Length: 75
Image (cartoon, rainbow, N blue to C red; front, side, top):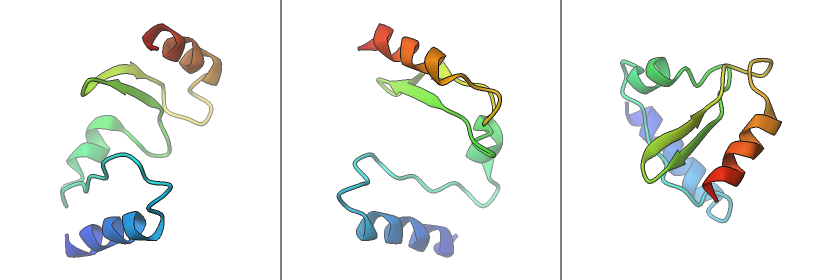
């Protein structure tokens, strides 16, 4: 677990101008990874702490144009 925390801290400190959102560390059980299927990749729009858009698993399973349209609705 400490390795994961260290990696997150390295990400934050090494790219402080690039990382402008909270960085979270998954538990060793990989609960978040399994729940949200973030690998191989998946796109989400989160608004007010709730998932407003959940793309299918990518890179073939999501459509960026769909995501842009969803963002337009939210903004």
